[in-house]
Image (cartoon, rainbow, N blue to C red; front, top):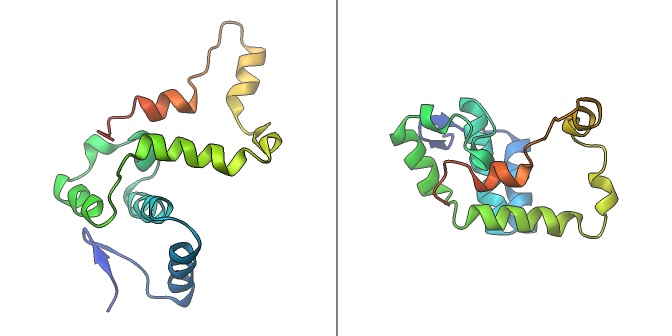
Length: 126
């Protein structure tokens, strides 16, 4: 029987089972729960877990159940630390990844909102 959380079904495939096992064995609880929340929010609509996009449009019961199964903890700080940890030994890989760099260069006065601002200002309580 497939796992169902908040009315959302997790596919019963070998790939899903292997991916779930792999992330549980090779990462920490923070990354596991974040990955699963992203999956569920993606089924509904996307960008919700990090910056709260569409959070106000979700059904509260559905949202509460997802968070109960996959808690956020101190998400803001853990998320930002995880990014730094993943890039600190290869910071050059972060270059050339945002279109706002192009707009900032070519449009006078354009000032991008940084990802840090989106994370810290999200409507999530943690």
